[in-house]
Amino acid sequence: MPKGRAPVTIWARVCTQEPCGSVILDEVQRAPDLLSVVQVLVDEDPAPGRFILTGLNAVDWLGSYYTTYVERDVRDLAHIGDLDLFHRFVQLCAGRSGQLLNLSALGSDCGVSHTTARAWISTLQATFVIHLLSPHHRNFSKRVIRTPKLYFTDTGLLCNLLRIRNPADLALHPMRGAIFETLVAAEYLKGFTHRGDLSPLYFWRDRTGHEVDLLIDDGRRLLPIEVKASRTLTGALYDGLRWFGQLGEPAAPHGVLIHGGEESYQREGHATRPWFCCY
Image (cartoon, rainbow, N blue to C red; front, side, top):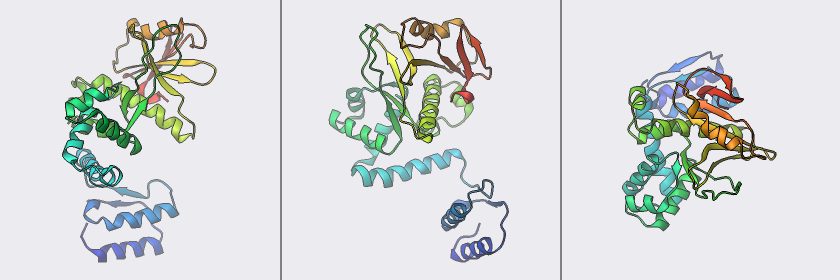
């Protein structure tokens, strides 16, 4: 794709004045002005498949996306002076996706104050990089954890920050389970958002070690969801669902287990679903 305004102008004139079928634009990053033209055409006719844009592979694209986010959005929104330090903070957050948020530990590991860590977490929330999942308030006569869990909303960006470059790296990565849980939590959150619903998604954990990865509160009952990256399911993986189901109303007697395989079936009354059918 040649650089310069002339090719952009000619291409735009052709596409707006004559019927235009599917168009493949390779190396589109070399002619960024084309993107604004494509945007106008897509707004006028949103039919899918009209334009195929290629150029950057996923690693380069995610890296460029993150750089643009830090250098533009974060600088404008939070007025952060030391972007290198903020980048370290984001990487530390990536290593904690799927875990309880510990602002003191985050600040200490990054070398910033608790107040700064809280402000930067708020910035990541405001720009939809992370989501803090609240614990459910239901006590069930136990002392429950009241600290939120941190999740990234985009597992591609998460893997990029963790320097995971391909599926083979992910398969052996110590955070594979946490990344899988992040994926499922993010898909549920996006599903509710796209429907225009306030998210009824929580998690539940008490101080004795019992927990449920995700909990949907529909106003009548609490539906427990366990998330397991394993493709091979054993009876022990249902322990959390069994335990929660016996607590009595409003806890649902049966829940859902989302797994890394491809099979869908019922087991002991619990719905067992593959990751691509999680929502």
